[in-house]
Length: 87
Image: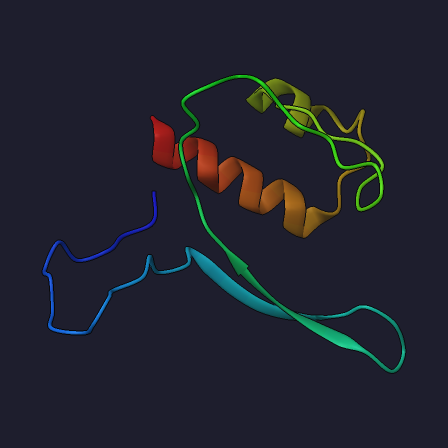
């Protein structure tokens, strides 16, 4: 999971550190910076914002590795790394 110091500063707040940081092309003229955090949910309930995403689901390790969902290699890598951190 992501880390954050327990130290409390004066007018200072530590933030969780991302597990991964990357930059990727969104289009030929536009790039995005992505900060990826691993978190553990307290529920299995999902809320799908269909204006921003075409779908949402929890994946098992077997589903990630199956190729059934045509995940990008970097998404598969990050998902498997997150599952490793949980175990």
